[in-house]
Length: 96
Image (cartoon, rainbow, N blue to C red; front, side, top):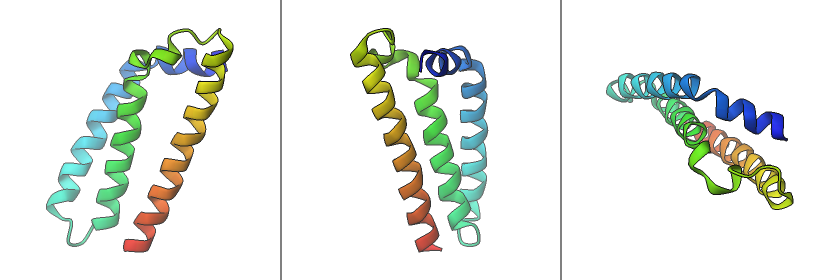
């Protein structure tokens, strides 16, 4: 678990670039949302994910991942991110 958190924290430049790229793609797709509505929402979901990954060092329970509670919160956080993505994609597939 510590390796995952360390990798996420050390890749802040990658998350920042990916966040900006996802936002640019979302803005472009917003202008053509009558044809690309599902793709627009997928780009927004990707931007949300990269925004969360970009702000991981600011989340308090990731600061001390060596403690037992930090490990539990990390697992809960990863499961919740998976569920947000899963149900977000299910919702997007239903609207298109």
